[in-house]
Image 1 (tube, rainbow, N blue to C red):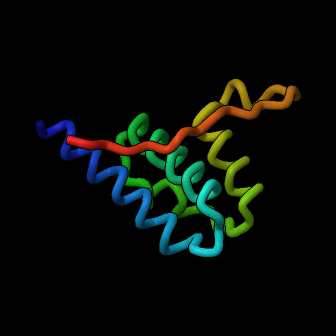
Image 2: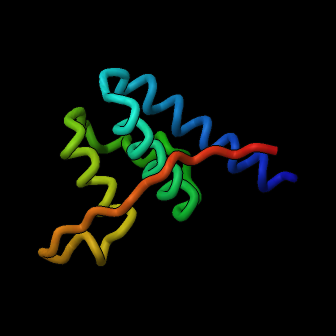
Image 3: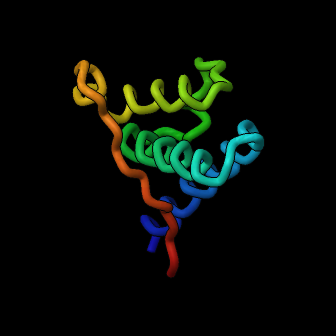
Length: 93
């Protein structure tokens, strides 16, 4: 149950961060950025806010490109078109 709570808090933190900093993004864009922040946060075991500390990105395409490079460093470095699918992420007890 602790793992569930930890991951739920991580997801809430990512959602709050996106809602606060990128309120002007549409629903789908917020969902994609939240998913990327959550996945990077989980893999690197750091809070979602730590991922965006050094970047002052406000443009969606630049932000997504930055997060994709962090999440998928090998796939996004290739010259081919890389478009992963990010379904909505939710936890329910």
